[in-house]
Image 1: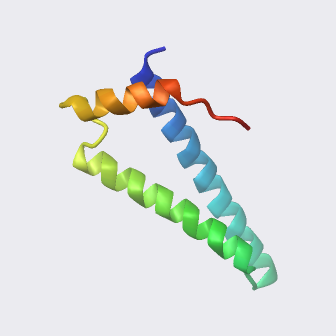
Image 2: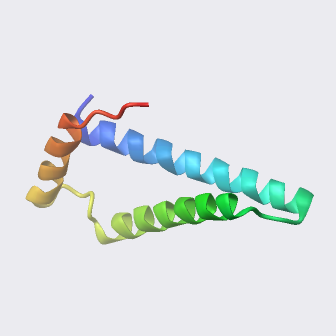
Length: 83
């Protein structure tokens, strides 16, 4: 799998996680009528990620039209995520 494809899969997976998290937070608020500071912060982080992903997509940041994407791919392929 190429670096660009791996990156796209990872970005989509994080977007899915954010969307599901926001759905869970919405259900929690509708059931309890409250939101904790922690849940609000997590929701804000998820919304910010989705917003920035959309802006980057609209602006063509991830298009391979210049060396920027190649540079990101090199960094991404050297970086390991530890869970």
